[in-house]
Length: 304
Image 1 (cartoon, rainbow, N blue to C red):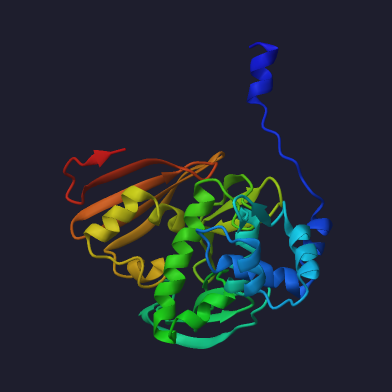
Image 2 (tube, rainbow, N blue to C red):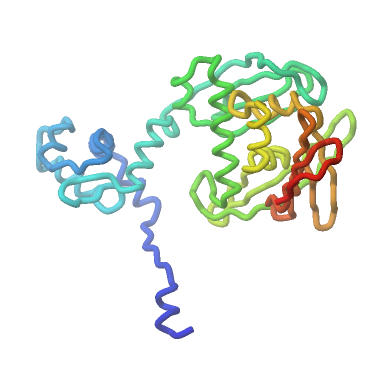
């Protein structure tokens, strides 16, 4: 490789210190400017039109605040428009990331706990959706934007939580941190175990190289949202988007896992319904390596 080609391969990113960037937003006028530009996200806005949208009488004062936003949050090109960072700030405001404090009291769901047969429930607190058993306390929790709650009736929340969880899982498995969009490294961090009274599900983790945030969920969840496995559920009318995946799991004829290796850890997850079985093998780095689909009577199936 020549020196010239090495230079072409280098990706350069100029960064502004975070305290300077967030300092730019410490003024109501600037936030109003971002909101005004977000009203027409696909069109640039002229200076005069933007000034009309923002309630600032002094055009000089308005221009000062607009100029402070240029570069980081606002781009000028035949008018003014939001940069990606500007769009994300407005999106975070709408999602309630910085402004909402929401909670939903626990309510019952329409399936039973796979571990103890108790009543499954949903709740929202601490910016997390909680899907747990009222009796044994086992279940799942995951981030959900507080500002989105007001868009749904309580009866619609299980489906909303399920759809959000799917995107949350798929963002991690495709390699991105849900907080900062940094690259993540996956690991099959725990094989299933525990005791009969206190079972421990498998766990996969995805640690961000940039912010160190760790995303985690069960190996069964990872396998469920893998495309070939997800297709199995949909083809058998086992709806994954009307409630947490455990709702669909509760309807299966077989739902189990087998430890293939402890060092390095490897796990096979099995799902069976209606005379057909699909299995997914999870590697040490939390990837799906092999998917097999076959008839439960032993007939030859397919393997990917």
